[in-house]
Length: 100
Image 1 (spheres, rainbow, N blue to C red):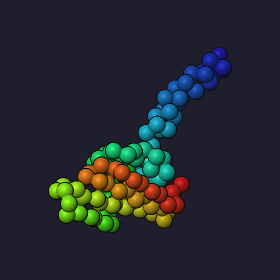
Image 2 (tube, one colour):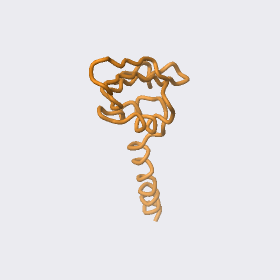
Image 3 (cartoon, rainbow, N blue to C red):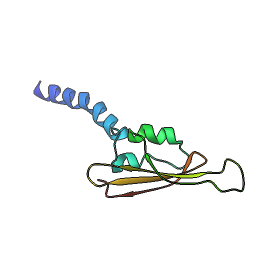
Image 4 (cartoon, helix red, strand yellow):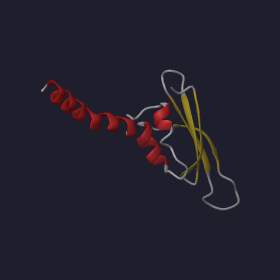
């Protein structure tokens, strides 16, 4: 009987553990950094990280209209940082430093 109860308890926690692994809580950490993918929109990145980024640079060349490159930064309270570059509103590059 004790074995049956133990097995039932283990299976009852399994879905919760896998959900946490696949959907980490928003925040500036390595797990959420890995969820940022090339082609995502700024709004999707904000939703993933849980807050708006700080614009650190903007370049709008004079050639084609609506061509713009914007870079945003997200910092955490432990000195970690995520920097994401958007070209015409879509992720084209990302970098991280000091994330756990």
